[in-house]
Length: 333
Image (tube, rainbow, N blue to C red; front, side, top):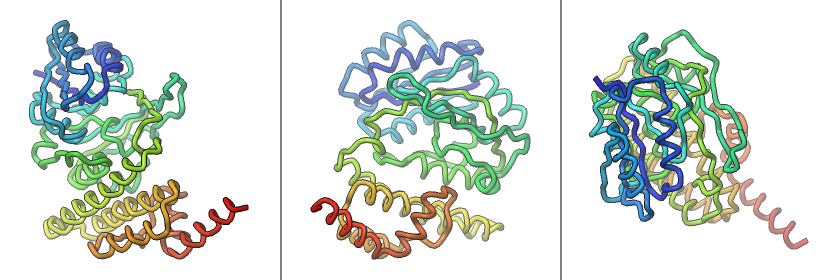
């Protein structure tokens, strides 16, 4: 039986693939107990050629090529073609740490988990350790809503091991061709899960590229992210409204979705403020959210500095205009 399927999307990642696969090999489980599904998302570089060479050397590698559907679409293809009891999403520029998978599988089996979260090292391009993302190990298994209110872990899909049966049963797939797909996916996953646990074991290293969507200065990518935020807001609100009649703990679920939707709003305006969008652009974006009834700002969010930004700036929107005038004056002087 294949215990775990490791899904690796490929798009302009030729320089990372060998190191990524080497990290998968450096685990303490037999090679017939796992599979690697490398999804070529119509990559324009030599990723597919390198992947084919790796597959010729390692029988556990399966390669699937598809028309470009983005990171979410590549992961969906991996899910649909997976045979493992569990699924791990591994971006090609990231690595598993040695001898991690077996413990993740054992803990998941022992507790019959839907999701298990683990720690990760955030690594700079020069190899330096930037930050360790981990939570204290918890012996208690939670449902998703209680877990979210208790545990402060990462929103990534890559620091988790998911039950394949859980994903399939709840039709949990990623939105395609958008940025921020992890946030949308994990919101629904947390809503559905009845058994989720956090451990403090560091199991992966995530590259913090200067060219990532949130760290580069490409205005077109920022604009796309803002448009994708609207897609995510609309998707989650529709899901919430459509499913709320099927639940009993309506108050806690409402609080959960209000916080998640507010967080996206805050992230959007924080991005615009940080990247010097004009007041007119920010006001237009706000009006679009209000017209589509996806403008959420009244709920406190878990990230303190951004919650302060929500209270001071977003709830007093005129301050964006004043801050822009002050920036202009400082440039003049």
